[in-house]
Image 1 (spheres, one colour):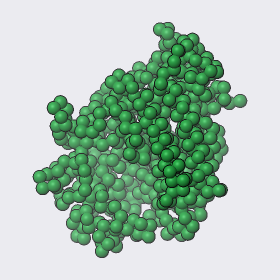
Image 2 (cartoon, rainbow, N blue to C red):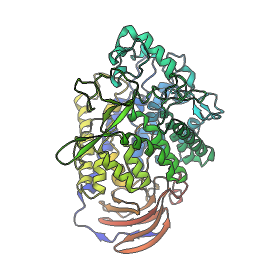
Image 3 (cartoon, helix red, strand yellow):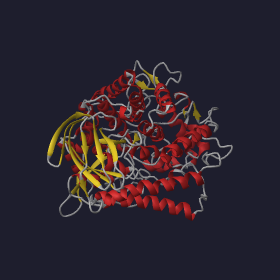
Image 4 (spheres, rainbow, N blue to C red):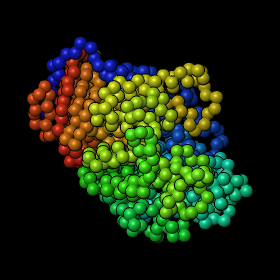
Length: 633
């Protein structure tokens, strides 16, 4: 292992470095107040209320603290890990006592009894982050194996059919696929008055439904749930590709090849179905393996599919699964799967002038049969009469939104054409890429990937300082809310923790690990580097040390480390979040040294900084959560 020592003192530390270290501290204090005020005396969440019977909400509770272990893994205080572990245990205990309409609890054997992998993906982000934070915790490893085991053919759940290589329902979990029943959603607030209609009308062959508004007509409620049960409770959908993260997580803990082979087998099955369907991924496959088995032979019209949720939901699974497959065997060819879907949409795109210089490509996000497509959809191309534009079955032409699929495609491949694809999808009607929104409106604070890419391209040098300012603003806003409401919310629902979570990890991921945010609905962290504190024998940056990945290129990275504290620190820098990359050479002060390892050792005396230019071979090592042997004492 190559070793490097900083010898360059600084007069004043850079603003991004002091802001980064302060962010760890102020966020820790906010989490301390959060757990003290928003959990009961036993540490349990304040929702659900006594006597609650429901289906939804487990993922929302976990989203209130899912990112705390990740901040610990990047260098945050031990409080982040301990508080997350205790709160998760309390959520498990609480939801294991909350009944569903199906005669069993919401959590069975510590896992959600049955939901779709949009929501299960969100709830399991905590599980994956714990692998980075504390892979030596036996409970963490046990859950990883048990959760993945729910989707093997020998599981009593019946979630998976290994012979046909399909997940047997859009809604699965610890109780299997056979409890999926949309009629039970009525008592949980998902009746006809729910927002089923906001995505438009997904079917054109049901006489009772002529337009989207019919979906929230109480007189149509019974028929609505009949159709949902007929078409959306059995068989496979693209969102189920998120199960590959559950398998990859188990592999990173154990190295057991059966988890890896599951990922490849299932991904290959979906690629074969896509080829059978002329290159477009079908959104529903029956339990027989037949495309369109429950939708009268149509490849569209499934749950969260092309006619309903559109590309925003369909694109999740192929991107997540391809990422996981690349991580597991290093073969970039897996990325052809999500790349081909983006290309199909872009080929059908329509350029719209945004200003005197730039056009924005509007790509179709949905597919369906001809009909009345009048519904509330802002930012889409419409005809003169207000009807949503429809061409050869494709409709809802809009910019690529803030979905990170194209960014992740480039990040995994490092190909120039994938980077150009990101530029070609740029929405010139929206904010300048050289700007950071200090108060991002969505729960996953999306959109900052593009400002970060501008920084990596040398077009936005102030980005590190700006994203740190935005993360500080997030903590201040949440702390202010807690203070103003007296730490007692007026309304307590399943979102109350998530809406008050003071932790924002996106800027720390980008700056310290050179990583985009994981795909929020179930992706794993994919990173250039991660750090380990030799002094404390734990993951993350040493106390007082800040990190900035300044460049990410095909050949490698440029990393600057700054010790803003007064004490000497020793650390390891690892190539990849899971040691999957390999350092080839490392240059500092104009001198190049061979590295030929997936880790380097760095000594940082107080008040010094060190810049490293590291060559990298990516995805050449077997990935693992295992901690470096230097940390194990």
